[in-house]
Length: 164
Image (cartoon, rainbow, N blue to C red; front, side, top):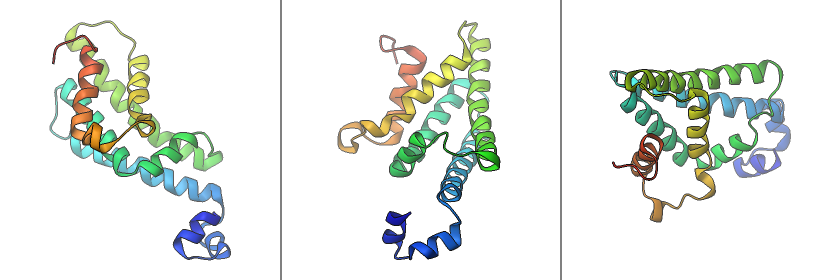
């Protein structure tokens, strides 16, 4: 809170007056972040009926937001379970909706292709690929979100030995 107060030029007392607590600030950040990502995803998926392009749109949506807001996403990755009570339940529900969209897309993909895999493991593996990008991402070397999304999608769908 002190760092935020200093960065915004607001007094620490003023921060607590407007926000109430560190937990409320974390809640507001998480709610805004996950609601924004979910809203953008709904817009991006509008009109996409094929599950593979849907998953690829999901990956691009996630990476674009993540790379635009790297510091916030780093905090959220490390403070994932810090919220309790009503705050925690509300944010968890938004995150469950996001997870369900990806799982449903992968279930449709599995059925359409006649594949056998556990969609829960697949979704969580995909999140693992996407969420740790802040530890290694270098824009000069790794390119923009579109390139990374394409590469991650290819690895996810085809493996590292597959063809593009």
